[in-house]
Structures are given as structure tokens and as C-alpha cells.
Image 1 (cartoon, rainbow, N blue to C red):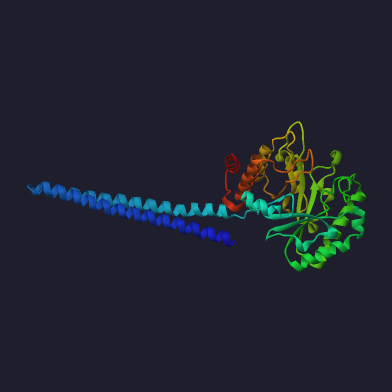
Image 2: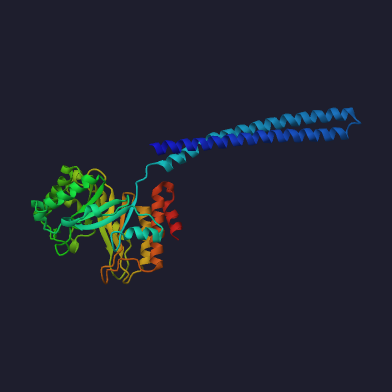
Amino acid sequence: MPAFTESRDVAVAVASMLTRAWRSFADATALASLAFLASFASLVSIASLASLASLASLVSLASLAFLASLASLASLTARLSSWGRRAVGSVYSYSVQRSAPQPARCVGVLLDTDTSVFDKEREWDVSFDLVTVYRPVESVGYNYIRTDGKVLQLVTEIRGTIQEIASGKYDAHVLKLAQEIKKKGEEVWIRQLHEFNFSQDTYPWCIYPYTPVKIETFKSAWRRLVSIYRRVGAPVKFQLCLQGTNPSGDPTPFAAFYPGDSWVDQVGVNLYINPGARMASLKERLDRGIYTSLCALGTTPKPIFIGETSCTDVSNDKTRWLRDAWRDLAAGYPRLTIVNFFLVDKGYPRDWALHGDAQVSAFVKGMRVYKGISRGWWCRGQRRRVKRLMG
């Protein structure tokens, strides 16, 4: 509301200033016209001194012209004042549109080391909002993680089965972390049990193939972990992060895994573009039911995030993919407000990092447009604007 009020006041002040300027212009025009008429009448009078009748006639004509000029300028001044009043409304309306609450958009990257994000900020002349760190819950080293005022996304890896986690085997490790976060007092976004809907070949806490018992055990484990942080009073938000698609085309909906509104703060997915006959855009992946499924989770809207995303270089034009990804994120997904790119190579064909100036340029330019849009100049014609800015 303060930003709204400030924008309104500025708009009214600007419009009022324009009105006064137009009035001053009209007054100046009137004076100039009067001076011109007086000068013209004087010159004509001097040329006609020989005839008093002619002089009287000229004076009469000059008087009529003077009165007509006043009437015309008065009408002009009224019209300009009316325009000024309309300008107040128009500029105020525009300011309301611009100052309407915009969802804060956050960008993070995962790079080779925990501190590489700060190096890339200087190298690429950008500013990231998030620091993302992956840690085994037994040895997080929380107090040694550098954030420099950014929000910490802490991906806690609990190397046990979902049954072990639900039974409390790792409670002591989670409690220690919760106490450290509480003591420091800075908000942390915890992403626990990420990609749980994949098979146990991926992570030990994953639950595919699904059974009703496994799904309920996952929910129980999730709530147990959340309860530990809350019992301590740690300032934590919890990110529920799924893999974008279930294994083997399993149709189980995301909603089946949802622990409940009171246990989740943000919902999201990890999405990667692997080698294929045709390069899929990020938009195509999101539009295959992923975005709508995330939007439908729970009874109260949750911020949506992408926990990890990138595109392999193998058989793909990553430069174009990056440009299209930023454009589509900016223009088409209002609830998706947190984006994290995974820019670390994991061995052929998972070449997720940026390679070469063209890819870096596409990433940086796209990110600047995306974040610029989130800071409020984004009003109308966003798709056209993004397309133009992205080249």
C-alpha cells in the first residue's frame, strides 16, 4: 500500500503540473496575441492618420479583434484545463496499474562450488536472489554457508528410506540443523526429499513404484520433518519438489502426494531437457500438465518454483533454448515466481553448464529481462515486449 500511495501522489502531482503548464502557456499566448494586436493597430493607425474616419474604423476593428481573441483564448484555456483534469485521471489510472502488487521473482543458479554464484555475479554483471546448497543432513555445516544477504535454499539429503525417515531415524540430525537455523535467525527455504516421486535407484527416499502405503508413509515422513523445525521455532519455509514426470508414464497425479496446505509453503518441480530427436522447450514441458497440476495443489495458492532446470548441449541448440525459456517464463506463468538453473556438467550427455559466450549471453540477457519485468515496468503487451527485448 505505501508504494501504491506514493505512485498515486506522484501521478496527481505530475498531472497537476502539466495542467498548470498548459494554463501558463495559454496565458502567455493571450498576452502575446494582445501585444501583436496592439502593435498591428498602432502601425495601421500611424499609416492612416490623415483620415480620422479611417482611424476610428481601424480602432473599432482592432477592438473587435481583441475581443474575439480573448474569447478564443478563453475557450482554449478551458479546453486545456479540461484536458489537464482528464490527464490526472489517466496518469493516476496508469500509476495504479503499474503499482499493483507484483509477485516477487527470484532467480538462483547451482554452479561448481557454493561460492561460484558470487564470482559469476561479478563476471556476468547480474544479481542473483538465491544461494542453493545441497548437503547431507548429517553434516550440513550450516554456520559456514555464505549467503551475503541472499535467501538460502538448503536442499537436505537424508540418505535413508522413506520408512526410516518416517520412523524418526534421522530426527536428531534434523533437530540439530533446526536449532542452528533458529539461533542464527535468518529465513531458510528447506527443500527436503526432493524428487521423491522417482524410483529408489535415484535416491533412497524415493517411493516409485507407488503403493497407497508408500504414499502415506511419504506424507507422514514429510510432516514429521516439518514438525521438528516448527517445534524449535526455526524460520523455515518448506519446498515440496517433485520430478516433472513420474517414471514409466505412471498417471498418479501430483495431488496424491500432497502433504497438506499447512505443511507446505512452495510447490515445484525439476525439469531437464535431454537429447532427443527434437528439442523440447521449457514451455512445452510445463504445458504438458505440469504447471496446471502445481497450480491445483492445495486449497490455498502456493508460490510455484523450478528447483532445477537446464538443457543438454547434445543434439540441442542450447543458446536458443535458453532464450526461449526466459521469454516463456516471463510471459506465461504468473504463479511461477522462483527459477533455479542447474549449471553443472554431470558427464555426457548431461552437459548442463553454459559453454561459450553465446550461451552465457543468452542466459544473462534473458535473466535481466525476466527480473526487469518483475520489478514493475511490465504492464501491457508483455509477450510482444519480451519478444522485442529478447531479440
